[in-house]
Image 1: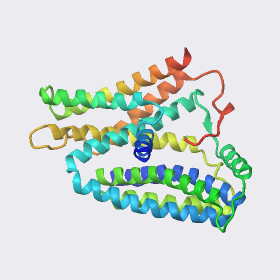
Image 2: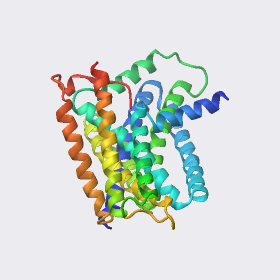
Image 3: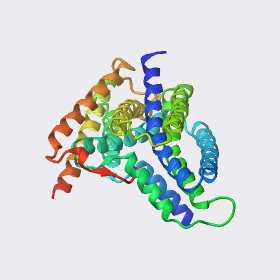
Length: 72
Length: 261
């Protein structure tokens, strides 16, 4: 169990790192894009552009939260 | 070779170059303070463990995961990984995070190695374990990047070529200089790698969303592979905006980071 926990912690730190906001931001952006696909909101071009904007926006928001938190 | 293939080779080379510089610093510190036999044995053991890990991970991924799932899952992981690098690069360039300094890291490793007691037996276990851990952890990142880049670009040889070149170049330079490669602007390299990982990750993860539609075909970007260049420009522009907006009065090079990251 100890080794399993250590294994899980290694992969968490390896992928998520010290800022889980970025992982959360990416998952939310991709989920919203998948949602837009499910309701046939746009064609391929519209969907990839929406996905790109969502990812860039989500990263920007996570960085703003990060730096505002450190400032206070 | 096409521009996309060159992109895979260069991104893989730069990412592996950075990781190799960090691993080499640790091995050099152990070699000069605890003895080369234990440092090199630790390195060899880590390389062996990495080879087994690579084969197992490669087999599991290609056998059990359908290609469409692979593109989304691995593209998303690569994107998260790349954005973590980009975040650190932005914070370092704007003076909000200490700059990575190989000389300081080397000095810290040497001090720790000198403070550790000497063990009995033929192999110095401290030097062996620190070298093993350093090479294995940095190597895992290399393996992750090569597998994700190679599989998603359908060109594992191109990604491997970039990694192998870095694995040969870095230790060769370090062996010739007999000191850590602190003259290389590692922070700039990490910034470039972060941009490339974020751009390729954005491209592949969004294309992979296509698995949720009938036929499971990937979403097509306008301009296909050329869209990656646009994504590089977008991430670069956004990062410069953040660096300018977040810049603190204190100069970035006034602080030095002594913890590898």
